[in-house]
Length: 287
Image (cartoon, helix red, strand yellow):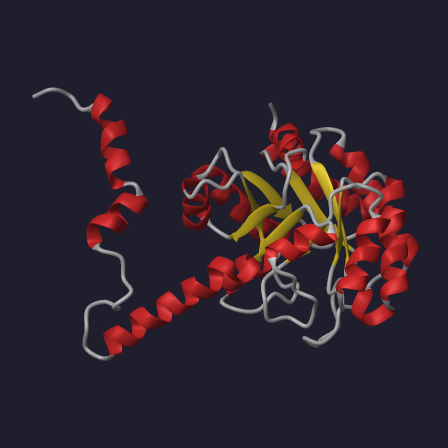
């Protein structure tokens, strides 16, 4: 089965799918080793790891695609939802983006309706007119036919244009053939229910990490509200940053590692030294 077909099968299973957010080979490898079937290649996590900064649409297609290939190489069986951002241009750019990820083995790709380039401020998420957003999703769905990759259509217009416009866009994306729907920044449970209803039975996606100005239900609550996929962009990134800080603090204090550091043998096993030795043994020349 292809990655998209495998993801379709997973989406038919009961319950909410917990989709960790990954950004490189190690985060993907550890996610797969923990038993997760799927992961989200998060633009915010890639921006943090590659740029050392916030997710403000500065990451390019080439950088995201390179990160995808790292993730895919380290965890080839993990089903990856790639963050395609705004498609990196117009509808034709969207098609190029979708086809590239489909050929490379992504199971699904997210396309959003934010304006690019964004205004020179970190505040707000201004979005393109509705019909321009329609054309981007239409282009994505058309391009997806080449590989079968699933299209996740996201609207970011709730904070700037209101819930009525956001729900109308979700309905429009369903009409255009999007496979998964995503309302960013819902204010409360009532708005979530409206968005889920607008998806007309197709899977709804949610960001469930705490801290942002949006409704953030628990996993149990999210499933009860009708969500099918929940991702956690800060779920691993925040502890990883805390771990780096703890290590630096320990070195500054004259120590050699933080109290939370893995034992050396566990770290080596996690990184795969024993696996390498086992695989390389067949190539050792006797004597």
